[in-house]
Length: 452
Image 1 (cartoon, rainbow, N blue to C red):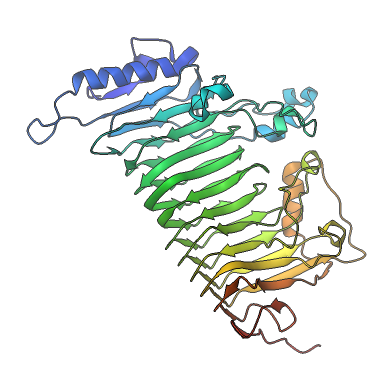
Image 2 (image 1 turned 60 degrees about the vertical axis):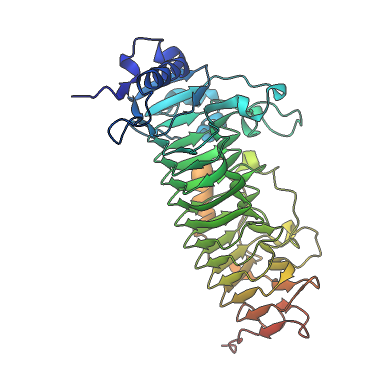
């Protein structure tokens, strides 16, 4: 028997969830607050509630505003399917597709945000509460938030459905909070998947966040949180993971795929861990530490940088050239240890044309420790057949698995700028591959095997 704190959006007496689920959920939240008014009744008082969204398509025309703790909104399936692939097929082929739109418990974000209304106006779910204690234990689980369409950005460069711009956000948390959970969700065709300010003990786990302009953005400041076991990839304009003024962030076991400006971008982040991830990028700057990022560990990750293989997206990049660094480090006492880094790019695509690509670029700071990184840099051999494909799936699989007919590419494996000193670089490149001032940095070259 369902309790009084369990709500089903299809059985509520206010509104029509299929026409505007936002109105329905807001009515439920008002009901919860009207019933749970006393904060201390026999060592209880405000237990919150569960709101259930059965499998189905639900338009959202009213923003959901959450200002209570202990709320769980859950569905019956994350429902993700690629909208980008569909939009880049001729419409005459849509009738042959098994599915056309995302499914599961799917929320269709029908908001029409305007720039003048502010960034949060386009959020499907907006969370904010002031005062003490901080809002706590709000959970989103197992449903899909679909932004439906991107819009023309005025550049004339892309089809409107390939711009990653529409002003829409899946979940926007504006105030400091504790122990939030985002689990098993699907996010698609949103300019921002998740924006969270001032996070503490946040868990973003096992979600599918793709074909969004940005995936996860931790802004303002925060601590002691984790981003784990997600499948995600941002658009060429944005971040897959962005964190600002954070301490104690754990990023592990994620599979981050192209085509984001970066896979992970830290701004003034300290004492955090990036380990056991698979990062795939089409551009330089897959991992960026800017500002004073200090005492972070980057270990046992697999980095791959190669080319965009899908014809509709060939005209896009993140604007960075190959001297920028695939991994770019600014800050003090960071450890970059035991990563595998593969870079496979066409010689004719290197920017600028006469540049030697840089893999790890230590830009500023001191005391960074870079050790035992295995760096494989290759390019297509003269007789290799290359080219873009109209099929996104087959093109990317072919690009990932093609390792034959590759030739060695001359790169700088580690570049330590003169603004950085007292760094230790061990076994991450040969004598010729590492550039640094040996008077103020420690260096041990990777031994070079003899020829066969």
